[in-house]
Image 1 (cartoon, rainbow, N blue to C red):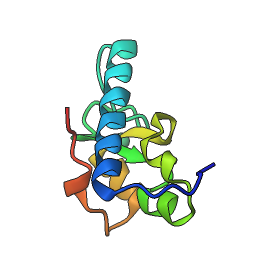
Image 2 (image 1 turned 60 degrees about the horizontal axis):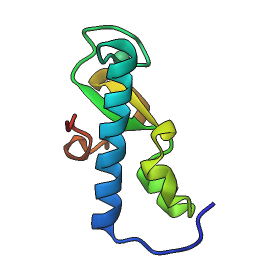
Image 3 (image 1 turned 90 degrees about the horizontal axis):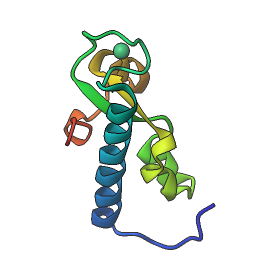
Length: 98
Ligand SMILES: [Zn+2]
């Protein structure tokens, strides 16, 4: 659980970027490719790093550390990501970023 420590948005975003990079690297090392983990189709592109529990929800519920927990990140193609997050998704913050 969170210890209540405040973390700046910049520091949080850096940790999230790092977690996404680790997630992608580990997935690639295990599989030799990256693919949408939801549908496994090779045409579900581009691949985004998608939070299972959103950054917003994690912060609002005092579980900020979930933002950079790689177990809370799933590789999702754009279509599956849209389906999961709905129409208000801000892709700018979720672009594949290696
Ligand atoms: Zn997909």
